[in-house]
Amino acid sequence: MMRIVIDMQGAQSESRVRGIGRYSLAFAQALARNRGDHEIVLALNDLFADTVEPLRAAFQGLLPQRDIRVWSAPGPVREVTPGNGGRRRVAALIREAFLMSLKPDVVHLSSMFEGYPDDAVTSIGELDTTTPVSVTLYDLIPLVNVDCYLTHDARYAQHYRSKVEQLRRASLLLAISQSSQAEARAHLPGLDCEVVNVSTAVTGEFRPARLTGPRLRGLKGRFGIDAGCVL
Image (cartoon, rainbow, N blue to C red):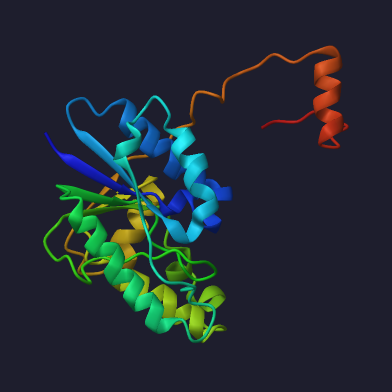
């Protein structure tokens, strides 16, 4: 039996309203449903206090509430704001110490590239250098398109490149597509860990529906569609 600790900040940060947030939540829920004899523990960042109770509710009936744990650190720590560096370094150590206290067999990081516009704190190996860490890899777009993303904002470029170096300490990268897997292999030379394409899938609420008459007209009107469409 393994104890798997999932850092849920991908579903707490500004990413929570985008695909990363949707995927982070769905991934953790699926892991909880299919955990078998393994133990799943969720780690939440209290700097996003308004997301804690909704995430607890999202796992109602899937995990015991005692397995949803919250850590706290002094903030703000967002890297876009000058002067937060000291708190950010302290927060990174607090987070890793907290995760170590949970005695995990493995830690999964739902999203590495967080903490520039908000108070997410992600790191690997700043304090704990022994616990294996897996990371969901969505893409390396700024690294693939340096001229577009990393040449005009020195602060963001420093932030992103520091996260890339942290990513290199991971024990396993779970790429969400063959494209993401290829990006890691092409743009992270000398990477020691394995990069596995786990692909992605939609959750159960997405399913075919036959809409006709008023329901179809209402849906098309809602989105201003006045012709045929394909989703």
